[in-house]
Image 1 (cartoon, helix red, strand yellow):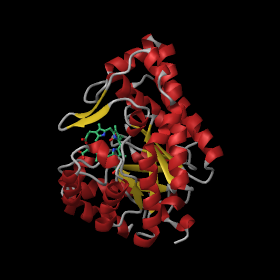
Image 2: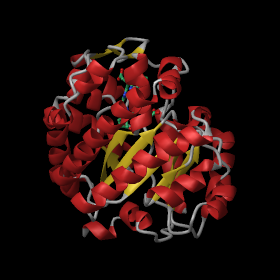
Image 3: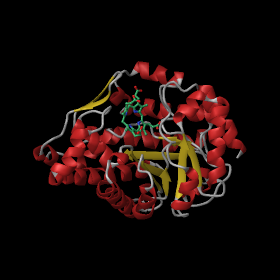
Length: 346
Ligand code: CP3
């Protein structure tokens, strides 16, 4: 299929495609037995993300079952700090653990050119770009990075699972230090995303999962600012590739984000009312989202009522069906099949 006729890319270019293209955040993962089998062979999660053959394999697993309109690169937003040589490991049941970054000396030691160390991730993208046209010709390949704010939260704090008090405090109390970190992350993220596009990613997504922790002022400075500069730089480097932004939990500020950053689409989190977003977000910016991941766990009529409400609100608008956050491990795979069948009817 000609790349531009892929439903996801048409929707991202502003066309109201119906039935809407769909894919799911965290569509590859522990809810799938075939993922758990690969994971058992590679107990170290970073090792899986840097194993192009296995990472490409798990990327494709959900498409084989459900025929999504997009494959999202299997990797993690914390591969940027990893490439910049910050210690990273994923502890069972604890999520990511990093060496906490607290000083200007540590910021100055970050070499933005070091993202080249993420070469295995770019190799995974290249393998997928080669395999997709043969195996899933209508599906588009999405590359991604974390938003600089969200990645900085993990780097400063050294872990997730809390409210990122150390990172938020640093942004207020040591703005020079925090800005220096953010500038390096911005440069590294531009290179990291451009390299994925050059390896064959057809769309790019920026996950700013913790955008909602900021005040409106902080949101403008640490989320809208860096995202707008990253979007502009990518326009120069890889002009054809659309960007989806996900300023999670930003509430009505998502409309300002959509206007100011230049992204082609915004992903709505579960709490956002799609009927509000339809009118508040500029019509040239596509919307993505936003089924509650817990509705997918529940399945049945409860899930279908939520799906109908979203479809009803966004029919006729450039739209990509997705969840409001990632698929969670207890999700029954057959509920995803039921969702896919409903979405195909439009
Ligand atoms: O969406 C996909 O299928 C592509 C792969 C992907 C992963 N992480 C794989 C992963 C993507 C796009 C991400 C993004 C990511 N990673 C975000 C932004 C999106 C979001 O969920 O808010 C964040 C904040 C992270 C950081 C991260 N990675 C955390 C907090 C955790 C632990 C939580 C958990 O679910 O265990 C991870 C680990 C991780 N990343 C897993 C997967 C499949 C689980 C690891 C495992 O298999 O044990």
